[in-house]
Amino acid sequence: MGPAKWILYRVDDNGNETEMYRFHQQESAVWVGKKYEKKGHKQLYLVTKAT
Image (cartoon, rainbow, N blue to C red; front, side):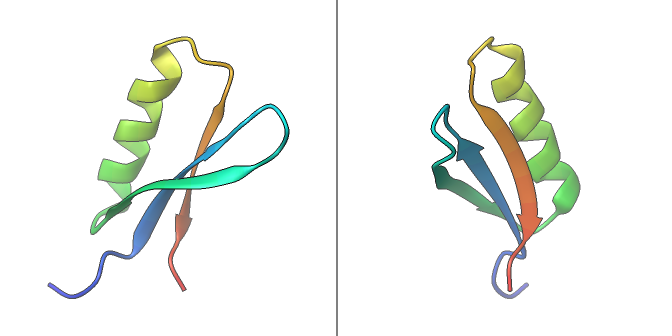
């Protein structure tokens, strides 16, 4: 399967990015990010491809 290719980041109010999780599938990363957004936190969650 190899290393995970997708990273879910949390971006706080000050613009600091923190890696939360790594995923093998982009869809999984996006799904988890949306679950966090629905909790009503002010943070932004974004998914990027690992380099």
